[in-house]
Image (cartoon, rainbow, N blue to C red; front, side):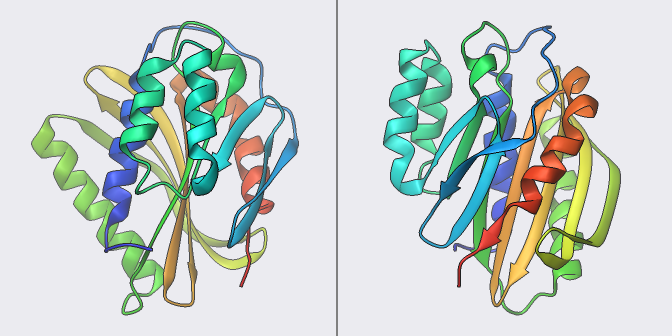
Length: 210
């Protein structure tokens, strides 16, 4: 777990990744969660047709992406390996031309902040950074609610426009002891609403292993 406001880096990472090869396309809604991944300190199941890997498996993920012709995406994962605890992607997207929906887990330590303080501070800073860069960032939904294995989850849905490419994102933030975990799904605008239920179901499988 690294320094405070790592979510700023997370947003930039996911924005850059989904921008690669972005274009109009239509894909079917994701199937219920099916593929299980177990890391050193967490476990999660992704929807069917999604692939990925923990920090220790990222080299293999990068190699698979290159084999699929997703060299730019592979390079982005490679460049951000230090920050990623997990990287996942829609393998059907990756096999076609167009944007690739992705999923990341990042984290950092901030024992002095409550979950609400962390959420409020982070999104305030995100808005400032995006505005300075000439990007747009609009929160659609935000609350702290029980979800899955946790009594308090900061769940935020927002739209963003980065370099003319519009995407929609859902983030889940969990505080465990002194650590914050940030789980992020990023996809095209037209795909998001069909898949938000699957994203929520995926989060419900997330478990921190103490």
